[in-house]
Image (cartoon, rainbow, N blue to C red):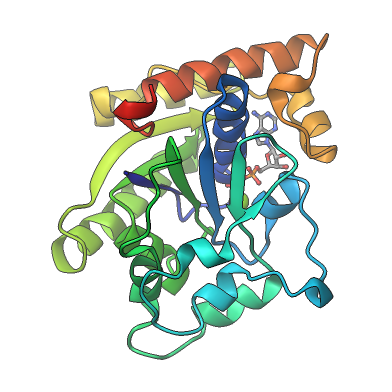
Length: 261
Ligand SMILES: Nc1ncnc2c1ncn2[C@@H]1O[C@H](COP(=O)(O)OP(=O)(O)OP(=O)(O)O)[C@@H](O)[C@H]1O
Ligand SMILES: [Mg+2]
């Protein structure tokens, strides 16, 4: 089972939006997916309609990463309101792990997944925070592959260069198996500046850039505001455009295990 990190050090480029859109596409196709919220902002957790009351004692990503323990990941999995979508949720206290000075902290996520039977899932996705801290590096160590997400802006290409450097260092020193699967352009607006920037990214990174582009649509915020899968927003033209784009993206990215296709 391939585990895929969705990453960019740059903030606000729709990393979480890409994970949610792929979850929505998986859910619509009846594919089981496990997503791990590795961002203390917990936008993925709330985006899936999960609200965590500490009193319920739900195990969170922070609990999972408190110590180095092998094979514990599935203990932290909860079901979400989205059919087929399981989650290891985040809470704000996950920020403590980015400050955790223990020398094994970056290896705890990989250890937690060691030996876990993930065969019921078609895909496993990690939503990374927008920083080069222990949480993001830990995700790149635990993952088999990484998908970079970027917007088509002046800073987008620089952002990809930066995350490419971080993942090259992880591959060289900590996780030799890590592959860069694709670069996905998101929140795409149809104007001259973004046309130019998309061309620029494609000129530099060629076939690594996914053909499928996720457009910017107001319907995204409507769906996200209601914590609903974009594919279920019937009768909304923007939502339909986004649903088609995310279904195409799911087909294009090598994230679904062959046995589930
Ligand atoms: N396709 C889209 N169309 C319109 N708005 C979008 C789209 N995708 C994401 N957004 C909006 O853009 C903002 C950033 O998206 P998102 O939170 O997914 O980015 P992120 O990279 O995960 O951010 P962070 O770096 O904070 O984790 C949010 O307000 C989100 O609702
Ligand atoms: Mg995010």
